[in-house]
Image 1: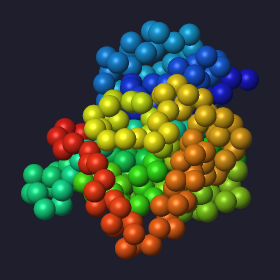
Image 2 (image 1 turned 90 degrees about the horizontal axis):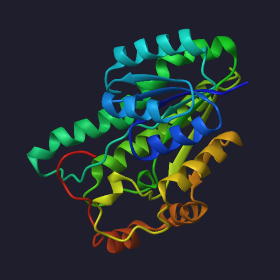
Image 3 (image 1 turned 180 degrees about the vertical axis):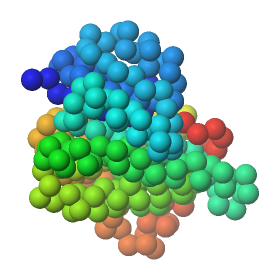
Length: 255
């Protein structure tokens, strides 16, 4: 039987690559993103059953309506992937960046909660399904000029852990996926070295493999798991000295 998958952030980057890979395996897809025209183009491209939902993940009611429609059409999903996310360089001292902080937190954290919420009751009743949250290695330590993004991804990781424990024994599983650098529009603006950066299709393939294996927590690629561990172990005085000179993400419109 074909998998049923609901995916946010499906119109570009990692979400687009995940949609294409799952479509090749014959999955029934619910694809959500802000840009409706991109979703229509994607649905026309894919040789799979697709239902598209142009929406903003910060709007809980829109996601609830999408979830209700998808369940009515395709049944309780096997996998729900909260992939939608934005990134922007920020400075706390700059008043203009206060709205950027709020936007990043709203999409990357509250948007994940809004994505999962309308599916959980039905998945609990069915006693099956997996909720997948896409985090980032950026959530391991705070990086200069990326306070909003790092904080949002750290919050997402801890939220996913809480959710995993809450759902223990319910039949609903939770996976936290922590990618390193991936070749997407989000990273294309970065003007600094990005170690172990992956082509987006390769990243999607590795992430799907971790989901299929039922990983509760996985860093992709494995080399970044070592980097993340080392970053976590670095004492503050050494971390501060090294990363004070690190490259910074450009400020501007969220990507």
